[in-house]
Length: 183
Image (cartoon, rainbow, N blue to C red; front, side):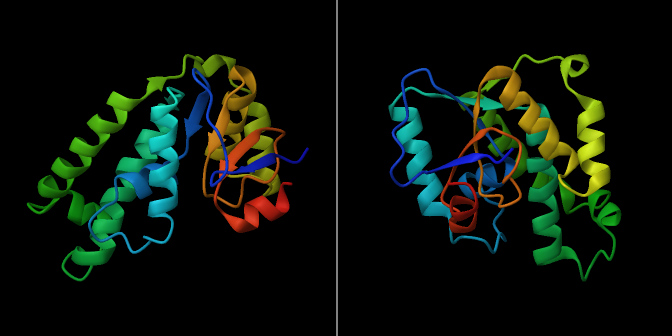
């Protein structure tokens, strides 16, 4: 089943509405200094500001925070340290890594301060369906879990990831390809 996508440029958030926010949005809102993707920052920053003003409720999944922290550190490694440390693990074990994690940790604390953590225990998620979707090449495993969480808690997903075309959920985005694919 296709997702239904709403354009964040014209979306009106409702008081108490719960929105699960995807990793890519957090990377726009709290970017790594070397993050080359600034194209969507203003659009998602404006949407997040409207979400907060309307007293909608941003929701966080711990795996999203994990993806955020990992991607933040990898962006910094790729943009500044890859020539010095050929492997990410070398960078992670270096003296340079704590300065990066300090910033990432500070941003993660801000993310946590905005959000409520969803309350679905892992044993209630449809891991078999997520594995089947992954094995078919239809969906990334973590994305399949986010879709399942949205369905079980009736959450909308704010994302810029064009992969979220299927799953039967409501998606909030400014991604023109996603908007076109999920009318």
